[in-house]
Image (cartoon, rainbow, N blue to C red; front, side, top):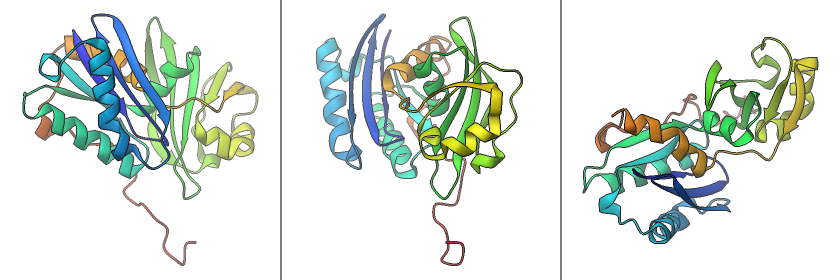
Length: 223
């Protein structure tokens, strides 16, 4: 099975190709230039893996949550690549991909959502899978959902920006913090492979980003 994946949901940009179990990836800190470099990264992993676009069995993209612009870029590029050859698409949750990137047994994933909020979700590892314990949501750091038990590892930019508040919120439940974890295409493709194998891909016109939050900026009075 040949699966292409990419993510542009944060300041990082990554693309990966899964070719029958072999993995090829490009990942860079892109800042705000995702739209300028993503296609080149896709071409690079396809060339390295020796898989032309027409031989792909599916394309996975970081569906969200994350940067609104980044989510639109990933979805639009996935649609543009998939449409001519009718390649099925799968959107993968960025917070779940972060849990896989972190690798801990119990993971609290937080991305900085700006506007003094975070994108939050929590997962527990069961075998090779991460089971959702707290669904993705947007909230103030102080309102992060209570999690059962101890042994949780916090990861993501939300902990880098709101470390003290989240530490206070979780107390002894939190045993470690990995701030540098972010969604990566290599983990998005790993999550996507079983979905494509189960026939869960959708057509290009049905692919959508997952924003979670509708509001993108504070009003003057709110600032």
